[in-house]
Amino acid sequence: MPNADTPHSRALRAKTATHWNQERIKEGGMRVTVILPKETAEALTRLTAIYGTKTAAMIAAIESLDQGRSI
Image 1 (cartoon, rainbow, N blue to C red):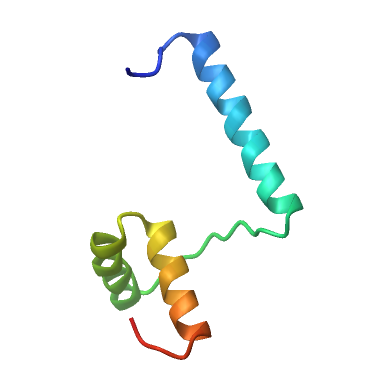
Image 2: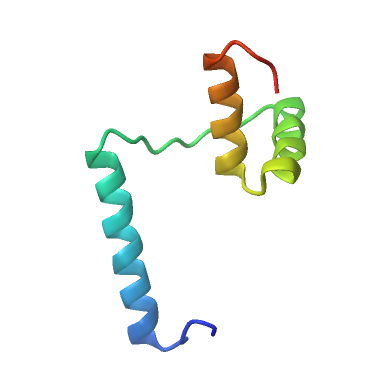
């Protein structure tokens, strides 16, 4: 079932998203904004095709480095 597209529904979703994001930051999470060089952006695009989202791709790349393996 799709989300309702009323102004009230959009406002509720925005409020929920804001709350969720603030909770992640309180737990030690971090918001990151970066401008990537072309080659790095292309690599991220390839990883996104594998992992589904940019967030998942970046997490996988970081975790693989932490575990001493390549992705």
